[in-house]
Image (cartoon, rainbow, N blue to C red):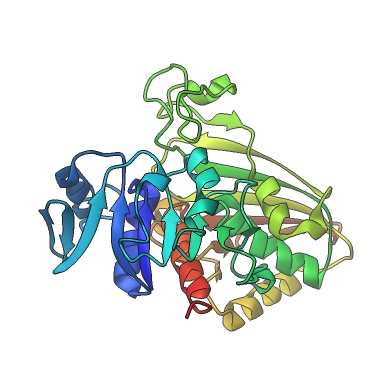
Length: 344
């Protein structure tokens, strides 16, 4: 399957690196607003979080050449200004985060591109899919613009699904500790939206200096989760803290269950899940981990059972780790492969 990447930032480059390892598809085109192809090559070659790229990268305008493979590079601001079909692209991954590109995605599927995967959770898609949760709902004849959701939901939704299926969730609260993102500031100031270029975030605290504080903020983690787990509608609430680290988030789940259980039953449930899953979604650990130990993991969620606890038999506390870049992007690559199974 021939894939085009729209957006070559943190998510786009991680997707490229992971696919380069897995060889799940052939990336034949990259579009990014960065006008400097040499700089794009440099940012792919060296990464402050994941280290040096294992391969040879050259530039021969208008191409990146990675281990001898030519990748056509364009520098358009709008996804629709790239002639993806002429470049022979079957599927476009929109990793730009720009909302207008989502609105334009439908037109791409009417002009030669077979599918578009959007790496966030907007409402204007045909379906949101989180592997390990609702992939069975995918209809290849109707779902052409597909959201791969957000990192928090990709981590939390499979865990919530298995608990709800096996024991039942009455109510719950999710708190995420999320690494800083590129739109945040080094020093205090207004925070500019990347999704809506030119707009300011009205949550003023997100504009404070990101290296110096934990910044409490609203999050769409549960809103995104309910798109793939609608049976929990009305049961869950959430909030988030932006934290001064480069990568790896943590999700703390406080759940009121529909029946009593034991810690042993909960651990056994997730060990069974880990041993039977199609993709590397859930991993269990009791190692004394800190966040940096999870950097580069391909799992959607690492359940840290050192902290699994129950109160009164039916109030459950869980701690999850997830690499919000590498783990999330691993599922995007897997989702692209899954969608590709239906393309002939």
